[in-house]
Length: 326
Figure 1 (cartoon, one colour):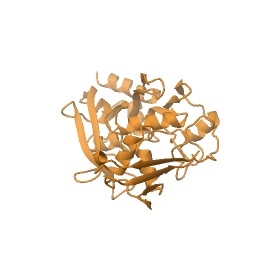
Figure 2 (tube, one colour; figure 1 turned 90 degrees about the vertical axis):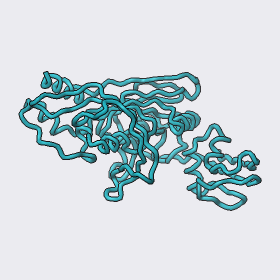
Figure 3 (cartoon, one colour; figure 1 turned 120 degrees about the vertical axis):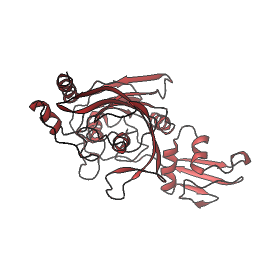
Figure 4 (cartoon, one colour; figure 1 turned 60 degrees about the vertical axis):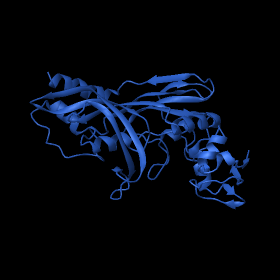
C-alpha cells in the first residue's frame, strides 16, 4: 500500500541534509532507500518536487515523501540449487559459488541468484528495492564466492540496509595476493570512484569519490627461491564500495590471484610444479571469498554471525603452495 510521510522541520533540525533528516526521523527506512526515492521524484519540499538528496533543510520547511507500492516482478525462475546456510521467516544466508551473478543485468537476465530465488520461493522475498533485485540487500562480484544475506520481507530489508548504511555489518574476506604487503597488517583508507578510462573498473582518487576503509592482516606467506611469493590475507571491511578489496589491493601493488580486471604485470610463473602452475594460470575466478558475515537480526534483535570455508578449488591451491614452499 502506498504510504506518505509528512514532516515539518523544527529549528533543531535545520541545516541537515534532507536524506539524512528523513532516515533519522523514519527509523524503518534506510538513507539509501530515501535517496533513491528522492532521485525518482517522490519527494516534495514546500510543495515542489526536489531531486537533490543533499539539499540542506531550513526550519519551517514542509516535507512530503511518497513511498510507492512495491513493484511486482516478472522474473524468469531458474532451476539452480542454492546453498542455503541458514533460513527463517525474515532472511536467509546463502553461500554463493563463483561464476554466477547476483541479479539480472546487461547480458544475463535469467541465470542469476535472483532468478534462482524466484524459483525457490518468489512469494517470500522483499520488494522495496529495484524490481529486478527482490531480496537483494548487498552483492558479491560474479567471480567472488561466499556469504550473502537475503531479505524475505520489506521490514527485514529496510533494517538490514540500515545496518549496511551504518557500516555495522561484520564482513571478513579471505584472499590470495601476489607478493607480500608491508606492514603485514594495517588499514587502507582512500576515496574510490568509477574509472574514467574503463567504466567496468573503480579506482582510488585523492580528491573525490566515496570513502572506502579496508582492514587487512597477513595470515600466511608462501615463498622460496623456486616460486613467486604469495600471501593469504584476511580483510575486514568498514565500508562496502564496489570492488573495494580488489581496488585496494591493486592500489598497494598486490593484485588478487585470478583477478583479470585489476591485474598487475608479474614475472612468468616458472620452475614450479606443473600442476600448481596450471591451477594458478587457469583459475577462472579471483581468489576472493566472503568468509564471515555478522549482523543484528531484524526481528529477534540478537547478534548473528555466519562463517564459510574456502571453496575446494581455492583450498587446493593453498595446499599446493604449502607443499611447494617447504
